[in-house]
Length: 185
Image (cartoon, rainbow, N blue to C red; front, top):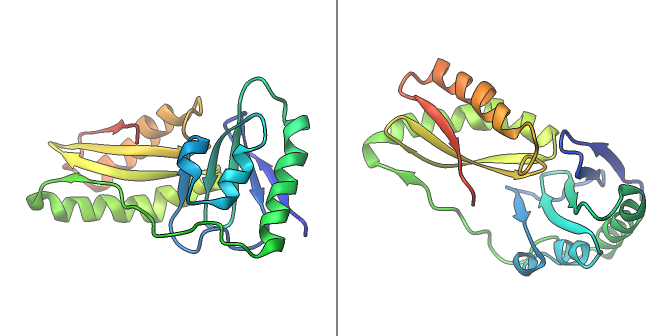
């Protein structure tokens, strides 16, 4: 099995592309070994010293390392875990995904639908290309609340991406949007 790797804008995160589907629908972001319980792959990756975050996308795995380990030491270990996972045929995720709560008023549903459509068609594909995801968390009083995941969480350029890229685009297409805020989980 051949697994490609790609750099991301976040120097602490690498994308691993196994050449097959990782997540059939949605994404999964694991910030610690304690949160990885429903993913055998994430749990196995966290067992490697230096892994600090695991993000599962449609066709990639983004792994974030801690500052005290180098990619030259960690990358072969991650590759081994990923190969073992896909050769074994075990599921990447077990159980049902949990949908995050959204802070939306019923009268704002039409605006929110427009925002989500723009995020899904214009923003999420680009963010996935960088090893991450952007998740809608709410809209109230003209403020869109978004959560960055994977390589985008903790990336030095993520705030600029939100404010200058996503906010400007949403304000252009949805005049009701006044600003965008990043929220944690």
